[in-house]
Length: 211
Figure 1: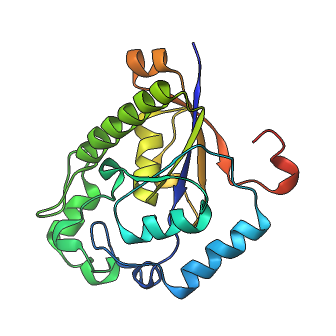
Figure 2: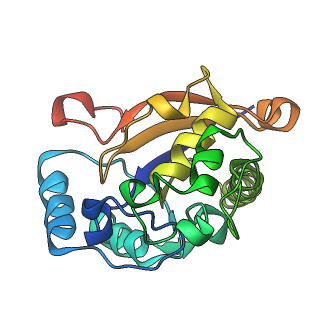
């Protein structure tokens, strides 16, 4: 059975990212620094020739998609928005250290959630739905390779929930405009809800011959 390739990318920087704030569903644009970093990365690295780009609905992702893939169709995928941090939105870890709800959340597992926010389990359920929908569309439209521009938390938790080999989300570091290549086999996805993690993306020119 045919395999399908998806490139997962983190959006560029925002001012809140640089300030260390939690901005899950807070809809902020790229900062000037973030925008320039993406243009520089595009000049020095090779992004794969994808057939469509899916993006989180938040500005920082849609703007990043337009910079990195200006000549490709861009489709909003609501399932790939960032985790909702509830009452922690807009605040920094330093500000929250004395907050009992925050400390409990940090020590909790997949089902722990910030007050009025979302758990990692809920995030994984909706990203599963997003991958499933995109895979069906790729099969129907005979696409071989698409990209998804989303958030660091979405990518790291998707790799932990569905990726092979297994990865610890706390150990995954993703720079702006970078991410991971994955390969989905429809039979494996249906039976085991798993995909194969192929490696990092984008590539240096000498590494990108096959993409």
